Image (cartoon, rainbow, N blue to C red; front, side, top):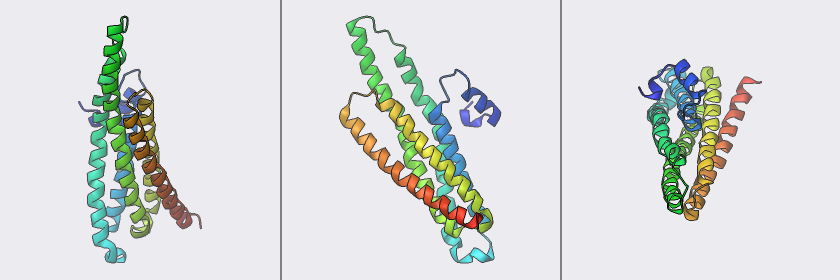
Length: 210
């Protein structure tokens, strides 16, 4: 059974156990999926309302994007687990001789890069989802503005968490060109994404705390 097909209680129980997966990457992807689902919820509560007729087509477009991103993030829960398992096995490889040490280093380098793949995508995808909430905070139903706030905070957390899962792996990668490229790419998205998320949340606060 896929991780995302488990019940909430089963998933959280497994997450809290000694099991190698799911871990922080899977949790980040799931939280991102929830944040994106809230964007979809706001869209569905806005479409069809006379008051928001002028922005209905734009909101429908946001809904289509949200549904796609939500699916991508949920798929990443299991993909992250699949990519981490080879790394877990690589750590357990013997390193008693020089030959074994070299082979372990070679396999680890490959496995570490593979383990970075999904967290990098989590960062990119959560950034795109935050941009959806940036639109919705002005176009979505004001009756659901708190859901925009919750959604963007979930995505902010998932964005930063994705980066953390990148950093824990690239710290051991010897390919400096790869490390610098990934760092630059993810740091830029996290800086921009958290800034947008904070601005969206401030707009939500202005509506709710007047």
